[in-house]
Image (cartoon, rainbow, N blue to C red):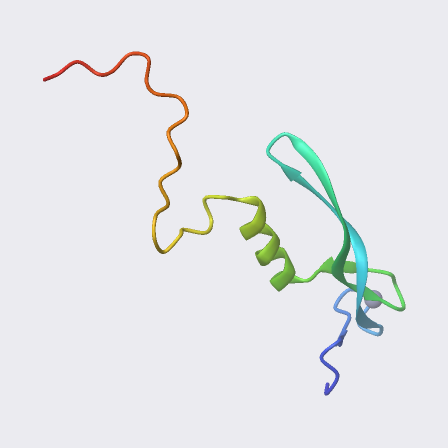
Amino acid sequence: MTDPNTKPCLNCQGGIKRLRAATLMTWLGNELITVPNFPAWICDMCGHRHFDNRALAELSLLLNPEAGTPIQPITPPTQNPPVNPPPMA
Ligand SMILES: [Zn+2]
């Protein structure tokens, strides 16, 4: 277990999983998106694969704008002023 790019396969319990590039397909809202060259662990015996957890976490940060809260809030430029301003209390 000195090679960080291999790990034992828990599916067939005999193979070695290696870090390779695979195509990830995932749902983003109602849209099916594909991410090529995504890091995946693929077994050399049974072919079982799972995607790299850390890469998945990074991907979810990229895809979910609410996941990463900016340290300093950025106020977007006002492009559409409210048509109906709230009445004064
Ligand atoms: Zn396997």
